[in-house]
Image (cartoon, rainbow, N blue to C red; front, side, top):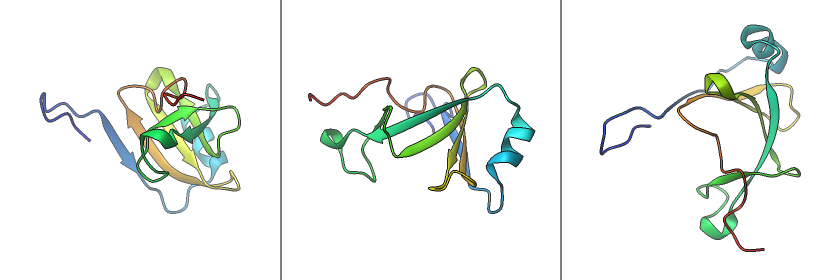
Length: 99
């Protein structure tokens, strides 16, 4: 994805077909954090709403934040769904919806 105004690439996503969580960690290293996210439902639906960090979130990532890498895991946490190379955080630190 890129910003139209500047033409700068802000994210690139790859979808490996057969990459385990353990293989990804061996490749990228042990200096990751595991982060859970949920969708901000008041700002869109589950397919298009922005994400925010949530301790009980259903979406889980292994993140190498200082390097701008976020690895999305499948439901059983054993396989990699996607690898994102990002210019900023994967999601907001908190929900923008009023609770």
